[in-house]
Length: 443
Image (cartoon, rainbow, N blue to C red; front, side, top):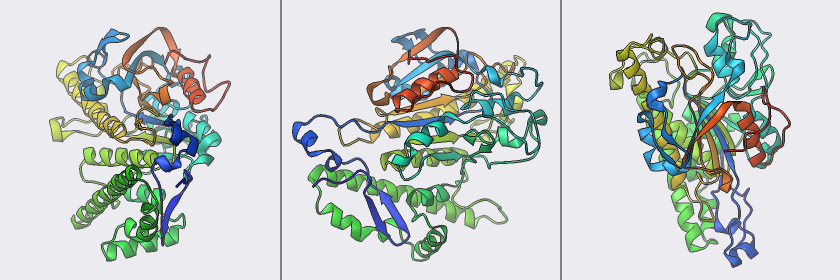
């Protein structure tokens, strides 16, 4: 049986895209055993407030390198990443606009543009790289792109040194004046991915499922059984694994909702885990599922906005992150910042390991066919540097990226140059992006 990549399992109030199956390959490719060329995925993850660069930096260059202390959590995926030293975001600097590095950092990271300094409605930035890609290839998937976060979005108000909060709390921009707020509630992301597309029907379906303790899979079960009977052995196994993963993630969300509902006098959106680590990992799980099901090929994740002053008492850091980032070379503070850096890297490592574990129809992994940028637009948080940024590029981009190394540039390179090269690899050709000066094809 040959089925189309865009086949859905459907039921009342639900539609579940399928993972990559052998049955989706053209017959001649399946007969020959040649690989099909799975779709490429593009993701961007933002970590705030810079990093302690000494423990962050790898030891050695090229293929002869070791992970820095802050990156120990990436040991299992070392051959799937490249750490890039020497990228810069010039437009995150003041350039005559005075203070406001944190707002500019978030706003500039994906656009390469100088955000207009205003706290009013006349915001102006640039179109972000993810939305440039979504405008060209987003039509190929159910969702053109996915915007995730862990901090509630703010679209207005005065934030960092006279900049609109829209700059600091959003980093995906559809137009120069339209930021796309990240969704922070895993339940709403799940419904966005697997709901019917009708908000009223989805809400009613969700109520019914919760009332009778049913899964979204119960609503598409009949369609799933029909399809399973027509698939080969390996595809049936892949489908079982995929549907089990959907159910397990859904159950995590349900459990988080029940826990939140049981807390007295807590005004917290349902579906958000109580622990920050669990929240981050749940959002990463949703990204994996979105890529696995080909619900979207483009995602952004604002783990925390720049300037975030969250504390990390769970591992002994009671001070706020932003407060600590102005360490003034205080060794005790610097060690605590390094702990926070390690925390964010460990969660990113979890995400990459999940991508690596999911197999495509042709035997490659999701990580093999992904390009994931992790980093921020500040290096040393104490000095608010915007060059020599802490940046990781993970995945092999369908064989087009040179993973497993430390790439150290000979001179400062605009990060927008790398974005142009990533766009090339997903078939999107642009002459310029933000402050780009060319392409960065060394990746």
